[in-house]
Length: 294
Image: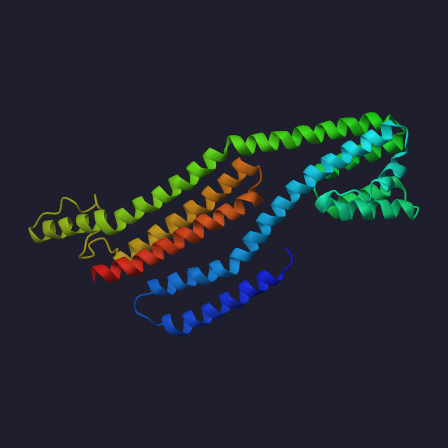
């Protein structure tokens, strides 16, 4: 992934916020504000890369759709009796969106005398799309073997059409599952916050009263008390909840990406959204709610 202007701007602003955060908030007794600002800085640095990754995924989808159009036009041209090399040259001026520069380069190589096989392999390497790479491999093998290239091209176009159709159907079918995944995760965050700020303090208070009365029925059941009978402080609990939320966000995002788009790479953006949101909500709640309680 190449650094672009947006990436550089994000890194510069993120580093500036990090420096301000270290200078003013690092030595504070309450580290929650430092962690909260740290999460904002990391988000500013990382968001441009996630946007770039999402744009690249969208670009791959458009290239796949345009290649389907290109392969259909190529098959129609070859069926009429035009050689595949001449057909590619004739189509280089047509508009294929993001694929147009690659097709023009492919046609220029053939015009310069480079063999169709080599030019197609160069084309597949430049585009770097798995669907196109498989299709080019079939076309070059058929062209090299001297088989019915028109039949092969029609089969390739039909195969690509089916693949793109299945991708769209799968994406539409599991859209509700993606939304449910996000909703469940935010409900999970809410439950963790309620446990941290409502349930456990009540259990700790009840445990302290039991200890003061000579009884301790909740020790071991609640696992924590305000007097530190188990050695866990509120800060320790907040840290454990934060680790739990980050782990849940990371793996939930990867799962959403794998289910929705068929690749863990696509799940990176979901993981980032969930983890950075969980980090900001947790650290922000620890700072603002704890201050309000105090």
